[in-house]
View 1 (spheres, rainbow, N blue to C red):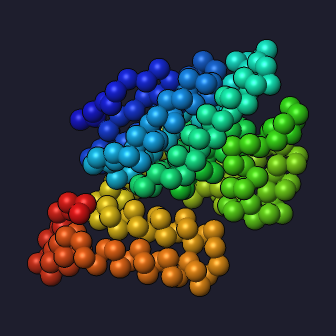
View 2 (view 1 turned 90 degrees about the vertical axis):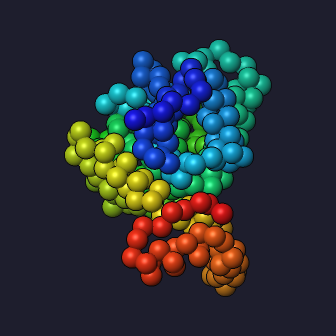
Length: 267
């Protein structure tokens, strides 16, 4: 039985499986484009999960409807903005992106349709992504006089390599789901009607594992990708050693020897 968290105007937030939170961008009338309100609500949601994760062990991010994951920033809402208003809104978006990147639990993008501009950047900011076969991806900012500012110039090269990212960003041309899979944006392409259940099945596998282990592993991967191998290995063993003294480590080994499922307490 799904449980619903406090109400948001632009997001649907539900615990749809034990320890799994489903977050749906809910502005289908404008292609789930992000306005200031959505930016504020995402920032509040992500920072809340950082400060008080509770029993949430995995997050899934998707869009309302069957055609568009997110059209990125709401350019109609931006029409007539002063430079100061534009930059203020973008700062909210930046803070939300940074908070998403800092989530202690894995976040999976379930790309239900096209992801353009900031929509593709949101996919890249998640830990990994599944998409429907009909989804298309593009960083279109250079076609409207700006450039990727939600992490695209940094996250795309890390996912697909610098040469592909340069072409992707400088042409602004869309690619399909199969090419996004080949280029490293996606982990899996799903048939229509199967996306959410497929993603939730993966989320449940993650949520069934030791939550402190998942958090430490994610932290180690994220940190290690920003540094050299030797420093990354040093960070890894520091993260590993923090698990040795936990109740969950003792419970995991005991459950293995007693041939039963472990009961995790996240401590």
